[in-house]
Image 1 (cartoon, rainbow, N blue to C red):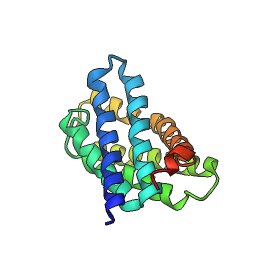
Image 2: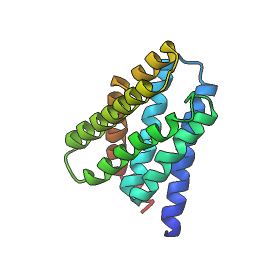
Image 3: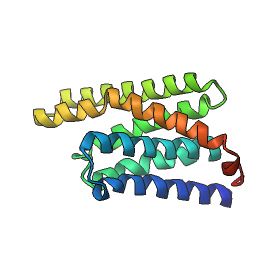
Length: 170
């Protein structure tokens, strides 16, 4: 891996991890925190993917759920691979559609991630007994909010990557 790619990926991973830590600093309601943090983490994944390649985005996609588990934002370890898979779908589709119209990339990436997360967590809850309040809260977080955070992430990444100031990093 080229030094520029490695450095850029590391910086974007740092942005994603710092974004995840905002919930400990900012006294905002959990739903607002989820939208803010989810959008920033998705933005970091997509900028890494569209700027440095799918491997960079996938690295962030798999590290962030591990850290979320360590921060107790994912209450159970089996949630880590499910979020990693949802993030991977988001990253791979983001890479495949990066030269398509922004509306298409936004729609496909956010809907696919939301569907994968909701369905995978629903299947997990069929096989494992989880307290109902946790199940209900997790399924809510893995449903329509993923559409919003995914859309914000895609549009934000496209906006940043089209800025002249950002092109200096090339």
